[in-house]
Length: 215
Image (cartoon, rainbow, N blue to C red; front, side, top):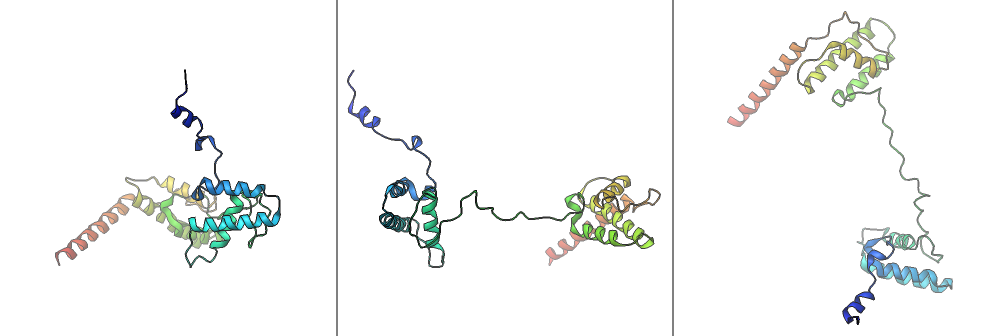
């Protein structure tokens, strides 16, 4: 069966899906093919001239604003990236570091005292740190008690229902690494009192907003 001209034409096509991936898609496959050709030039001077011509083409494809002082350096860097760092040329800028040579930014370190639920906030951590620095005695015990009551208020502010004092004491111990504790016989502020104060504050806020609307 004879092959149709259309079939012959399609057989001669090369689909991008069958070609190797390109390093920087913004420049297109044509520029990458130019870079591949530049690598094959044996004479270093001619190879450098070809590289400069490619950068000129890149400059038209990705124009930079006048405020971008490092635009030229980025273009030459992109050239090296597209060549797989295999271009030995005379360039106005050194090639960028390879990914395996670039350590990247340093990891940020976050100081935390144990583990704390997010709703307790940094102020609680600072108070715990302050209490841990104090010598054993009545002042430290009083501050630990105050922190425990604060934890309970914060807990009930962001969580519905009541909370057992045992849980608050356990979280204080965990957040202080076992350094702070409130004896079981010491009663914390009652949940009903905290919730009552919370409702009163909420009602006052709504009345205040309603009064402003009437004006």
